[in-house]
Image (cartoon, rainbow, N blue to C red):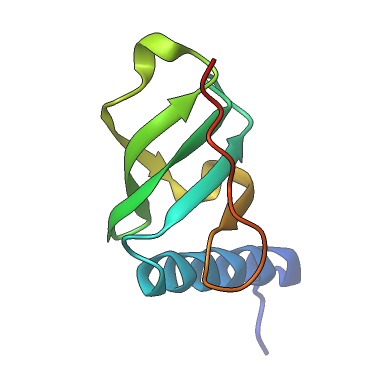
Length: 95
């Protein structure tokens, strides 16, 4: 009999699916909201290393943190949107 917690299994499946989705969309623009500071990122997915997304950050909620490479743990992402050839474009949020 399997003693795995069903909720834990769902969370693992979610994380695996998000990692695959980010890998599939390298070099695309992404909008990410996290629960931790600086809360919001807009950037280009540069790479995915294990469960970390590597972003070239264009915009954050703190301008001093922009223009840098950030590693974001997939598990800390609350909401994301990846720009593709279909659907809405992510706007440039500069002054």
